[in-house]
Image 1 (spheres, rainbow, N blue to C red):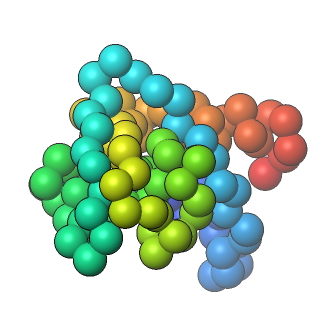
Image 2 (cartoon, rainbow, N blue to C red):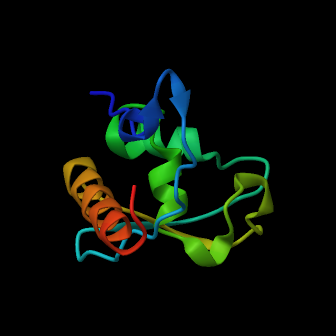
Length: 104
């Protein structure tokens, strides 16, 4: 299942600025220890969601780690929003709140 998070931001074939959202914590979330040179967000996405395209959801669940995978420090605890359906619901909810506060 692929979810195009850019779909709501396309106008006339162009993509508008996509906001950096924060996914709230959920009791079913999973944590992993990040190992530089070993851990990759696409691999974590594949491991937990069976598809490699949701690394961005993992970043949104970990705002203290920054917005670029390469800035994550070795030994950091990473929260994986789980399950995928719940993570996508949280993303959509955060996006709706953002749109109400700041417009599309």
